[in-house]
Every structure is written in C-alpha cells, then in structure tokens.
Length: 319
Ligand SMILES: [Zn+2]
Ligand SMILES: [Zn+2]
Image 1: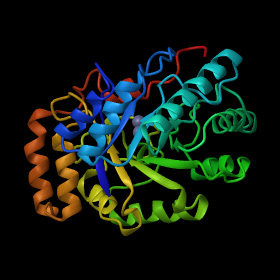
Image 2: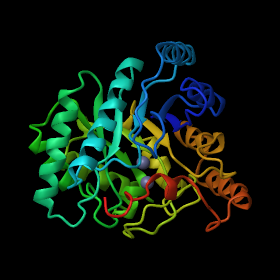
Image 3: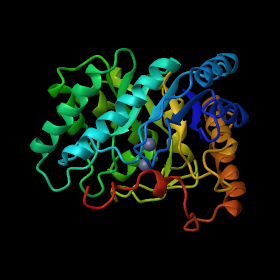
Image 4: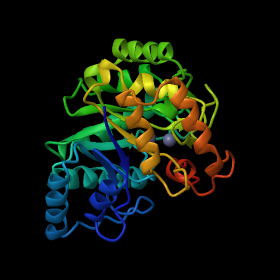
C-alpha cells in the first residue's frame, strides 16, 4: 500500500503538499475549501499550478479530496440536496484541475426515509454529479452505520452500483474504523481476510480504490464512529499489519484520518508505524513496544475536538 494522510489546506491550497511532505506522506487527501460551509470559491489558477508543481516534485500519488461534512446525497430537502450535489461537483471539478484520482464522500443519511426511497435520491444525486464531471472518480465511503447513515453494509453499496449500471467512474473507499464499528473484526488477519472476501463477492475488489486507515476507539459492532491512532485502538497493530501487507491491497492508497499522538491530527508517528508494519520492521514484539511508547502521549477518552467527532458529525439537525 501507498501510505499518506489527510492534510489541511489552510492558508493556500498548495500548503497541503508541504504539510504532507513534512509528515512523510506518499499520497494525500485534502478538503476543497471549508468543510463546514457550502461556499464554493474556485481557486486561482496560479495556486493550482503551484499545487501541481509541488506535488509532482514530491512524487505524492494519488491525490484525493473529501467532500465537506455537510454533504448528504440522500437528503429529502430539495435545497439541501442541491447544495450537496453542487459541493460534490465542485470537489470533483477541482480534482480534475489538479489531476486527482477522485473524491471521497459519505453517502449520507436517510433521515427517517425507507431504504428504497433514500436509494432513489442517492442515485439521482450521483447521476447528476457524474454528468457534470468527466475524469475523476466518485468514491463512496462505507459508514459505521450509526443513526440513519447509509452504506454500512456491502449489500447497500452493491445496490447503489446496480442502480448506476456499474458506472466506471464510481468506486469505494473503505474506512477501517467504520468497518470495525459496522461489525467486521479487523483485529486479526483472519478477520481482514473474511472482510475482503465478502467485499469481493458483493461489490468486487476492482471497485476498491482507496482505504482510510484509522484505528477504532469504539468497540466492534458498536456502530459508533470514533477514530483512534494506529495501534492505540480496538483494531490494533496486528490488524493493520494484515491490511498494509495484504497482496490484494498492493498499490492501493491508505490515508490516515487519525487524532494524532499529540492530538494535532494525522501525524508522522501514525504514518511511520504503518510504514514499519508494511516493511516488516515492526513485528509482534516490536508492535507491543510501539504501543507502550505511544500511550503516555495519548490516554484514551481525553480526545477533544479531534478528527472523529469533528469530521464525521451527522448533518445539522433537521436537514
Ligand atoms: Zn474515513
Ligand atoms: Zn469516521
């Protein structure tokens, strides 16, 4: 796997590349604009040019974007739905200008509607998004299944692909923390294997384009979305070892969205643990040592205002 992180675009969009390089990324994920606002302001061409040049120099590949937290492709409210579609198109078009692989999005929330009804809305939204774009992929992210959130099962994801006639520009981003919370025990190689087999049978591994590598603070099957640093959560180092070294995942990008050992967001230490697992320089014993060293910085339950709660907040009430 190629390993990278979600990095901030604060200041200028191309600053993201510098931040990615600084923590040792091989690939990167960004937000396009402010993830808590609908405001869509196209980037000046010179900023995008600087981004392309810096990324090329750093050899970071692939580049992906994540849609704003607000996006709900299943929203029953026409104006909210329009905003969600427009924001996703804007992300996709910016990725097309930057030569990115695609845009990751949470599918959204049913808001009390039935699955067939919600699916109809999701399909209509995705068709509009695909019509307005031409090269980049739309990557649907699996959810932890909290509340009304769609896409917690591979069967639901499959039905979306079927509804879109298996459109070639639609793919999947699997998030390890969401999988775990949805009931897939990724803490053992056997569990990882079982999940990948089920995914292959139901959706197809050829549709898997990206992995979000986050440990889970929430227990197995809890349907709660709480990201944890690699090795500090319920999945643990053995699970990540099985993922990053899995032959079927070779060449796929893995992006961390972890709280950070200093609670500053995705960091060098999380990435370095994953790289060591990938390279085989952090075995079972080494893994335990790494865990022991990491703990003093990061005691569980003290994470405030971190990635998980901030980033995967449900849409504002009533929307
Ligand atoms: Zn994720
Ligand atoms: Zn999450």
